[in-house]
Length: 222
Image 1 (tube, one colour):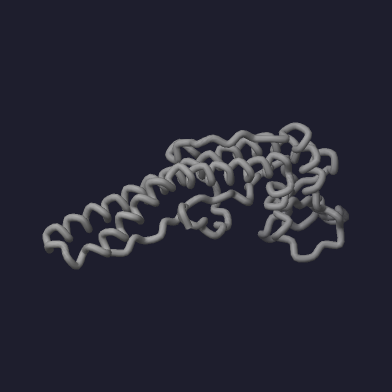
Image 2 (cartoon, one colour):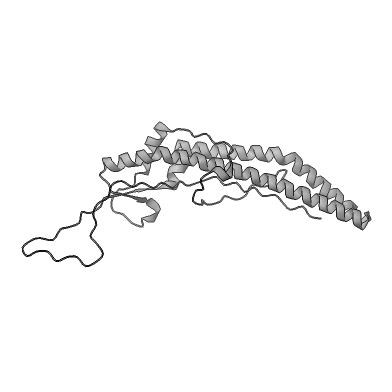
């Protein structure tokens, strides 16, 4: 039989999603505008002021974001070490089975193969469960960053008299300097330089929007 390679379903989150709504201004309706009274100039809707933030960059470069990534990577390495001995035993038993299968009675060979498959499935399930716990811990840590970041963004918007905050990656060209990512990182670093990451129950964690998945690490012992 062939023992499949194990894959770790661990994601180091690389982006956070922040929604900030700060005040609303009246915008002209898309429907037909009412006719102004004779001699009265029509009302002009105020032009909204816009700012932008690169959410991925903020998480990558902020002290809090870096601490989350570093802790997640360490947790992954620790988990790989924890399961390495069991994975090594399984591979060794699979090699022995392959060498002896030709001389085993059919019933014995079938029984041993079922046992090896069951052990492999159980090990993969344990590794997947641990990966889910790590991911849930990452999500909870990112939520703490969001909570701390919300008031910072609101304060910057008030200071710059802005009405709208958009994702920097949604802007193709701008002649104005409207990016506040650097300012937000500086203020976040002062109040939240580190966020603890701990194993968490995936069912209890609030799901976050999907982030790009890094390449899966090699299985223990490879």
